[in-house]
Amino acid sequence: MAKRVAVVLAGCGVFDGSEIHEASAVLVHLSRGGASVKMFAPNIDQMHVVDHLKGSPTEEKRNVLVESARLARGEIQDLSKLSVQDHDAIIYPGGFGVAKNLCTWAVQGKDCSVNEEVKATLQAFHSKGKPIGLCCISPVLAAKVFPGCEVTVGLENDEKYPGTTDTAEAINQLGCKHVSKSVSESHVDEKNKVVTTCAFMCNAPLHEISDGIGAMVRDVLRLA
Image: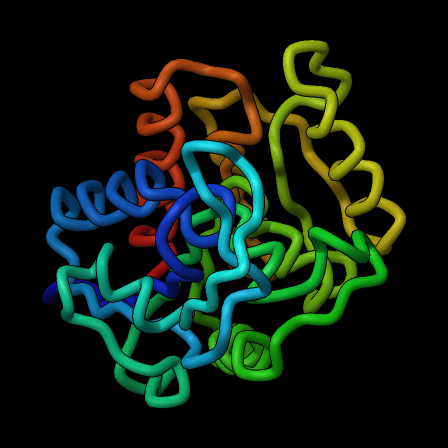
């Protein structure tokens, strides 16, 4: 029987939404694994809109659900309609939208708050013992919501991407355990059924990032 997986998006575009290559890789690997997928996003305003050509914010206003529909080819629902009973697992691709729209990590770091719908959804899957997959910066959601959990955002002390070490240190300061993993690996917290991989937190070729996301997806489906 096909595993039923919810995928939660945070907009469209690396600097203010979901990272497009990560979201696509998640969907490709879920398809390869024979999963049945439904996509969701919170119906909220983005923190801001970034001109991806210039790399700077604009005065424009956009909605997370509307923008996420671009990635979902229109097949997406309001996160408030997600029912844990109808799904066997949930996955969050990364991108700055996670740290800006799903929580406030981008501006507050470890002192951030998590969107209430996002937090409630994570807690619902966790309480039912259903696996949660997260990649790139998304593992910080688990670090905030599940004290003591284990996650990875890549290799600590990685000179190619020093931001990884800063994020790993913040995760440890929250009372969680950061586990160093290479880009092609995933980490499985068997106790909490939280599966993480670093994706674009590491400076790596796209195919290696896709391999790591594939490892994460396979572990999520195994736990489901």
